Image (cartoon, rainbow, N blue to C red):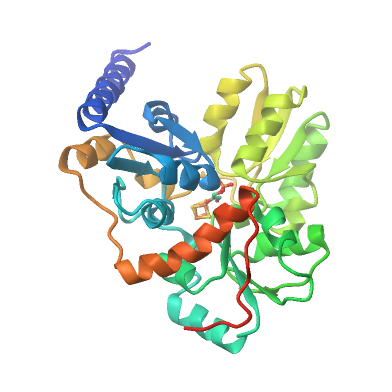
Length: 331
Ligand code: 13P
Ligand code: SF4
């Protein structure tokens, strides 16, 4: 190990212990998504997929919660647990799905289809959640859609690829919004096929935000937690993984014996399997956020109350409760 490696290691060790001390002093809870860097996942109290983070965020007792992920995840926690102070390391940590579903356009779509049930991916703004009927994540979408009466029209957004995959899987037709994840659409089907020929013993696993052409090669398609579970339980020794690379950290922790191969993107020189929004976070920014208790997620209370209706429906269905569906969209 070189001197600079040592300095780097000591630095991250020191900052990690500073964060742990600060967390204890402030009685804060840190929640982190699987797409964060490994050093961030390692200082978190809970690491998980977007459903798990929303659920944990709803249950957390401490008054201060730091969400190391993207802003829509922190907003979901604030909507569900409004008396807590919810921090994010960087308010610019957005999401291309949020950007592709601006409120005014989404509202127009809803108004044009007043009889439809708006099933909205959690990767959306609080404003869009407030005009939706139910929120889904990739881990509970099938269960939630199956609970909607078959004769009801479904408006699904903002991720068209997740929507298309669900339509096929559930043999049901939706009106689709045309948003997409800028990271997952970069995986390249032709190069993936070539990689599979080179590694015929590898199991291909993919997140449903990938395009249909890529998904056709995957034997397991699911949320980040589902993909992690597959690596943990499948006795195979090699996996080709079509999702963001942050999750490799937990995969490798659970299965140090397996080889994980990143699914390829078209541009061979690009580290495009990283979400630029998730990767805006760092230990330094987390420390600063805990010290200053900023940046904080704040939401207009009337908006929050409206957005909670669709998130509560998600929680109720996912935890086995029955729900009622509105007959018409009303503003
Ligand atoms: P998960 O709910 O599977 O963690 O997905 C979140 C996400 O942003 C995927 O890009
Ligand atoms: Fe959004 Fe894609 Fe990043 Fe997930 S990976 S947060 S969907 S941009």
